Image 1 (cartoon, one colour):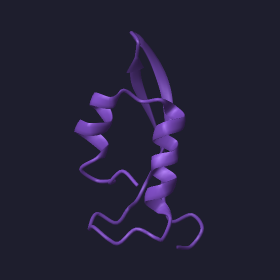
Image 2 (image 1 turned 30 degrees about the vertical axis):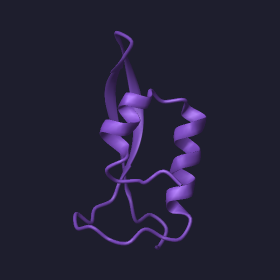
Image 3 (image 1 turned 45 degrees about the horizontal axis):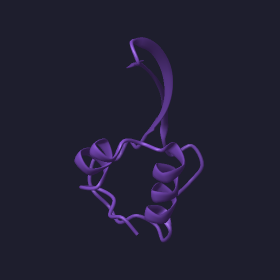
Image 4 (image 1 turned 135 degrees about the vertical axis):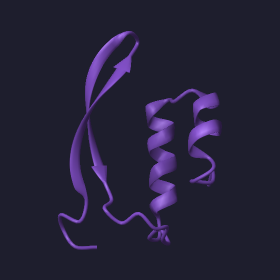
Length: 68
């Protein structure tokens, strides 16, 4: 993938009753593709590092990224 292939966006998100400005990188390609080798492993390390709630992981992330 070439550099700058994602659109950089900011989004205000409510976190624990306060607004937080979040940085997003949005793929302009709307169709599904095949992730590069190692992508799922990186996402799973990020999930573990972030200590996200299990319910959120199962409802939101696991339908896209399998646990490795």
